[in-house]
Length: 182
Image (tube, rainbow, N blue to C red; front, side, top):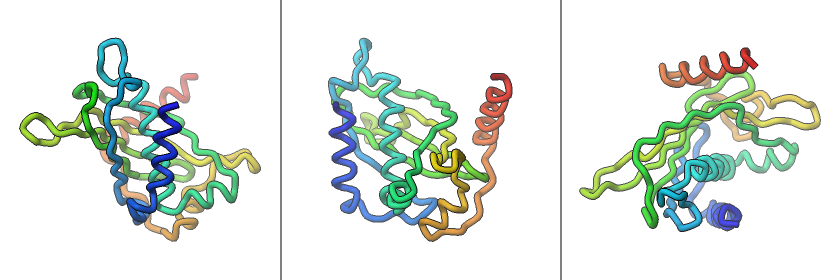
């Protein structure tokens, strides 16, 4: 139930957070670790990170104006790969920010980065986790993924993709190797 409440909050407050310029602006969402986010070690459950990252991607779609096209065409967001690096735990009641941004793209997929950051005891920023995801929008009518150029056109952008950084390329190579192996 807590995800639904957070989702309702996200949708209800999207306009208050303002529009994001596509495709490179960063979504920043404030959160706090609640009791239902904890695992038996009394820090945020590893699955909860992924769940909150769904909200970061939703915020990007809402605030970049893509959500209208998603609803109009009946497209479905799909994650095809993900990799996370946990760095520091998030304990009960800790406030943190989820930062979500698009890094690069190709024909029918985008790579996004999620960062969960909090303030350390001395006030400095602490990175709690970093994740990369490969995602796209699936069109059930055509039974195929929507070309990224179509997505960008829906939000009034036609900028070319940046080249993948070394870590993003390693992520894509690992995902491709897994895809070929299965």
